[in-house]
Amino acid sequence: MTRKLAIEQTTNKDRIFSIPDFVWLWFGMTAQMGVFNLGASFAFKIPFYEVMAAVLLGNFIVSIVLVLNGDPGSKYGIKFAVFLRAAFGYLGGKIALVRAIGATCWFGIQTYFGAVAINLAVKYVFEYDNWPLFFILFGIAQILLCLMGIKWIKWLQNLAAPALFLLSLWIIYFLVSGSEGGWSEFANADIRSPLPFWAALTANLSYWVTVAINISDFTRHIKNDCRKSFFSRNKVSIIGQLPAVTVGMVVFVTVGMVGAVFTGNGNPVEIINSSLGGAWVLLGLFIILLAQLSTNVPANLFATANVISGCFARQGVTYKHGVLIAGVIGMLTMPWYLVEHFLVYLPFIGALLAPLPGIMMTDYFLIRKARLSVKDLFDWDGKYSYWKGINPAAIIAYVAGLVAGLSYLRLSWLIALPVALIIYYVLTKIWIQKSWPHSVTETDEEAVCMVVEEDAASDSISSKL
View (cartoon, rainbow, N blue to C red):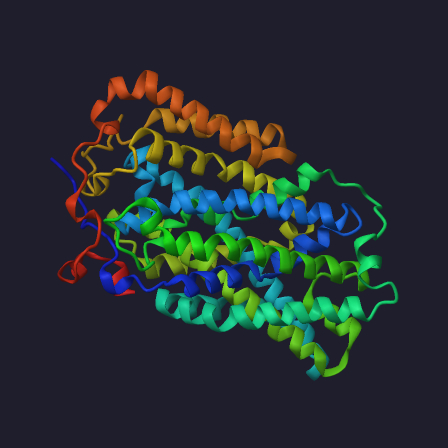
């Protein structure tokens, strides 16, 4: 008996992101304590201009992956967890949960950073010290905001991102202009513990591998005419995403690096407190809270909720259930331990997740020529059933990429993605296409996959958010 779910696609009214919205979305997501901390971790280890080269190259590569992996969302209005079924099979698509693991850890880390910032400010004003309490309260506040849905997330980004950008430029100017040596002192700071350029590049690549995987959760909400060419339907993604993620990372990594060189801290609250003191610490707190909210809610909580609801839709798990599950688990990950080993954590996440976009892009563009049968993505016995719901080639390629990435941890992203990509392509051509020909030779692209009309809104989960 064929088992099906309601086809969940965004409707016209759900497509609310324009180019400026996507620009501010990415500025907001790059402005976060994790990026400040990443910049601080490079201080006295690698020259500033090499860091900038790693940031520009790494995030340019990531931006390409973001655009390519976002096309199924732009074209079909489907979630990442649904799109993954084409390559991994209906049951194998639950490997999307590894994305949820990474994002859940990030949610805990970002909530911890926010809690520490709140604690510093409250301690200064009221002499009350209790960061665990603020950790719980800040986590609950983010969960409640995410439960309000994508429109509230868009509003938050459009408010927070411009303020964060301007405040961060001010911090850089204040610290550099206030030093005796100025910019030259910063750019030529002593190298005490050398870090290879490729390690810095891997850290930058690994930073956004999580969102590069599930970017279709966002592109499914962009305004476009999905029936047009690849570049036309992805105009918002290309123009809004590529410059924003790159420029955003340049600015906010620089804040962390400048702060570490001149004050010994990468946290804006501690930077401002050590430089100005007094009530200025409240400005630092404002920066941190905006940064954490603008990143944590869309990149970690919203994304994970979509993965969980997509993987367990047959069990009745909804988006709101996913938000609650992700939020609670994220707060139990003891993120303070992960922060202590940041430059180990990032390459590990790269090894864990980088094989997925390699497999997804290969399957979608090289094997299927950017054509999917949407109805079969929601049919357990449809074209993407493979062997008992699992595509063995995808699983083998993922494991091979993971092992390769872990074996060369400092180059994890650079190794894991191409290994998985090549193995998947070869196995599909010599094995899968012969054993399950209907799984990879689509000729019946779903007519309703382009723009779902308003009368189909009852079938769309996103229309209920």
